[in-house]
Amino acid sequence: MCEMAKTGESLRDKPRWNLGGTTALVTGGSKGLGEAVVEELAMLGARVHTCARDQTQLQESLRKWQAKGFQVTTSVCDVSSREQREKLMETVSSLFQGKLNILVNNVGWGKITPTTECTAEEFSFTMVTNLESAFHLSQLAHPLLKASGSGNIVFMSSVAGVVNLRVSSIYGATKGAMNQLARNLACEWASDNIRANSVCPWYITTPTTKSFLNDKDVREKVENVTPMGRVGEANEVSSLVAFLCLPAASYITGQSICVDGGFTVNGFSYKAPSPSGPLAVDVPSASSSDNFHGTQASKNTPDEGKSSRRVTVSWLACRLGASQAHEGRSRDKEIMVDGGGDGSVLPETDRSLPDVSEMTDKRHPIRDLFPRGVIDRVNEGVRAREGEKRNGGVSNADPDTGGDDEFATGDNSSNGAAILEAGVATEGVPPFSFARDAAPVVDDSDDEGI
Image (cartoon, rainbow, N blue to C red; front, side):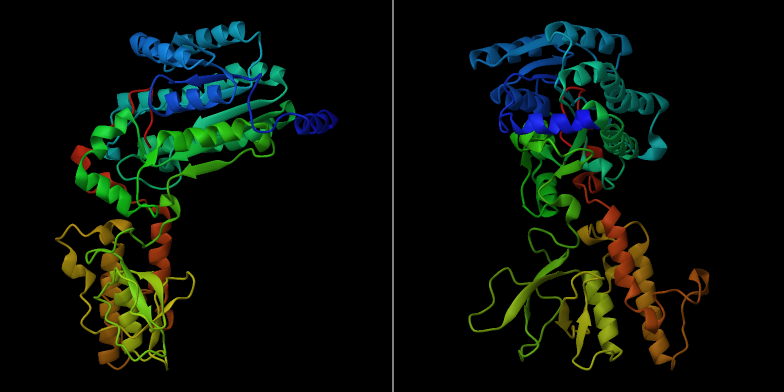
């Protein structure tokens, strides 16, 4: 413990915002995120060694880096091979005299495949390339990182390891495991003055994702579920990787940080209002005499002089809210629509709101916000509640779903929105959920987009 205290004191004496005098190994550094990380670390003064499978591509990158004056060396390595990983670490140890400050496990591979269609070969290769290689390289690097007196491991993970991205269970599992590995190593190796963190990108413009994102519809779907309304750039990821390796970040360890424009914390809101998805609505204040219709969405600022505020609602929230309002549950004809969020209220909604089930045969983005079956349960509950009202308090819930369904009881009418929110919290909205056949292979083992 005294040794760790001394390390903290020495860090205070070091320049906090540069990596001069440090050494780094970045796997898969010839293109994409890996290339951006190599350049970011080198610009901050680190000596960097990187590897990739393609010798020609490595040489092209090396010439570019040398022209910029970067201290970079390269070697060919397929990190899915245990023998080649061992040889790589021997090379690094020789280059850096047995000391290594930074290890960036960047290589990744993933094929978007439904779980039931994933082959044993795909499973094994994904596990070996993404997880086993990162685990083994961290093992091999441990003595070098410890010898440096200030070691850092950064795992290039993905938002797929934080939230569900459909038909990518194996890829997501490896990324989730990487996030947990970072937490474990952060604790286990803290006494050796080694920190470990993971970085989780969303869609980033790289050679691998570029052709996929050139599809206008796909790109629009990505941007619509991203609060910042755009795809990220590689240097927006590499800057975080570099920061985590700086002396300025010396007290940050065991963290999984998303670089996603807000995607993983997004709920019902889309960047652009759409009549077929959640609606961004300018809501008049309770004192306003204007009637609010849930089917209307305004892209513009409210008219001058009107007191209003902006909230985000969905067809589902409107549907549930309309039912509650019709039951006369609020003296002021206002309803909760945030599903347990910030308590936003809306005036009574129009009875003409469409039932979500009417949109079943349409490619409705809102349906893809929820796990399969949830929307149908909500509609069933709403119908049961309305039937109970007509029948004088007797529930007409479908016996096959249970007569005490939480959606069918008046006392628990807010449960529907709460359960919807719980589903959204774990359900990502990837563009390839709309067009699986167009989904890319995420990586060729040298680059990662998500």
